Image (cartoon, rainbow, N blue to C red):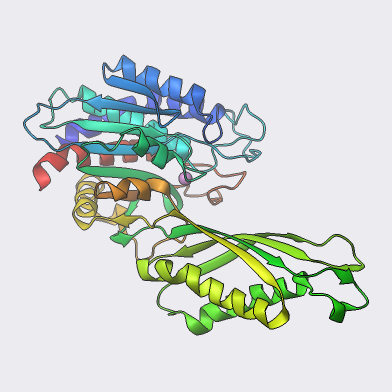
Length: 392
Ligand code: NI
């Protein structure tokens, strides 16, 4: 069966590259994937699959019916949205939409999802149970997966597989990871409220800028002195604003940032830990504060059995030298974790690195992929879907 899957995928390669280039040239921002969704639905309908549009706002769901002998339902998730980045790749099929770019490889993911649907529907056999393909919107804003779940995309799902491109792995190889793949990401919004006054007489005022500086410095130092160094924690304030005039003491400073952590205990304790430090500093100098800590995305925790399934399939398909068991997680975030609240799953990394040219990171305006990775992704997912029914 593996040889048949590989043949089908290899024959589809030119068509898949054409699809990927079309999607790449027509990127759409999170929540606005109207054309992409219509295009995806068109391809899926041409395969004779049951297609539902407008799932999770602009998402698409298609099902490949199995024989019905096995009640388990396997979901495969890909994402479709692009980023607000001005593309600078100078590719012939570069973005036609100035300021919008597929710089995170979601064009590749969507194509891999479509390719998997094509291969599975052309296999000439019915799998014992149903495969549901989820094409989700709005991953970049961390919301699309929740929208899909609200629209019952995870109903009856027993397991879910996902894929993300990775430029630091060469095309032709894949990476799997047991346990944590990405971090929990929470939003932190903090306002320091002081008292305005004349810049020349700071003792008569409460300087919110100076207090904000202390809060930032103390929080960063406290990470190294009061939290367990073996449990990663990153706190970044990416936005700061405050003050009205160079010769007046600022009465308010607003800090907005993100907190990343891997283990649930660190994540659980974070709001209280931040507040204790902020309160201590503000109390010392007569300032007040408003802290708004919002849980956003949990960590992606890959299921061991399903990770083993993908690893085994990839080793059979590509050989041991082209499968990496990744030693480290990423402190990036991925809303694939929202599906994992409903069923076990695993996400693997698809190498898209080019052998000679420079490999720019994800979200870079010159990010380019080696398109030979598309077939690797399709075969790995299609074979894993085939083997899933006999693997447990
Ligand atoms: Ni991405």
